[in-house]
Amino acid sequence: MQKKRFDLPSNRVIYSQTMEYIEKEKTFLLFKGNNLDAFIESSSYASEKGFNLIGIDMKTPGLKDHLKSLKKHGQRRFGVFCVSSKKEARIAINAGASFIFSTHCDRGIIRRCNRETVFNSIGCLTPSELAAANEFGARTISIFPCNKMGGVSWFVFLREIFPKLRFIPTDKMNPSEASRYLREGAYAVAPIIDLEITKYPIGLIEDFKTIK
Image 1 (cartoon, rainbow, N blue to C red):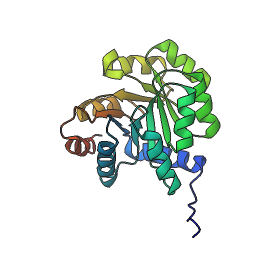
Image 2 (spheres, helix red, strand yellow):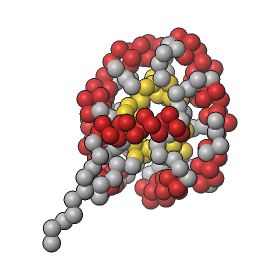
Image 3 (cartoon, rainbow, N blue to C red):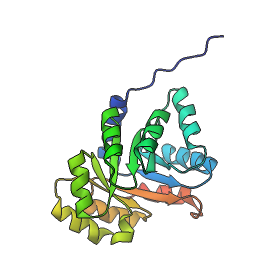
């Protein structure tokens, strides 16, 4: 019996959809943890609640095989965060990642994502890193880990220096903190939900639907 073939949307189509989701939802949900089943359960619930920008930690065991399985069946539903090298970016993109968040400013990651037309948010904390990422062609800047560096006050400081850049504060945060970032002009927010320590991720997911 001939296996059924699925037509995958192109990278350009996925990129366009991602941009539309950002404009509408303003929130990436990034799930961290060592249990792939916990991610699948939480991400399925998030999807049911209307979230379309869902990411999984690059270090999650079984990540690559899970993304490849989805891709094989015609789905490219998830992005990948904590990408730390151009090799990891290549692996994630080839497996079917819909977007990439990096841990730091890396020219190779930016070039790979831009060449493949994959949405990228590049990890930066300092003005020098921001300037470099912008020069390298980063699509957006992930202030990571934003709360450990000073939270909203640090974001406001960086935005005053680089008012034209698109910032996505990225870290563990509650819905109230996420709302503050958006009110201060963040392009989007990317809360990290640690499934190893969050006792009730479903409730937290519901709370993030209320942010403005």
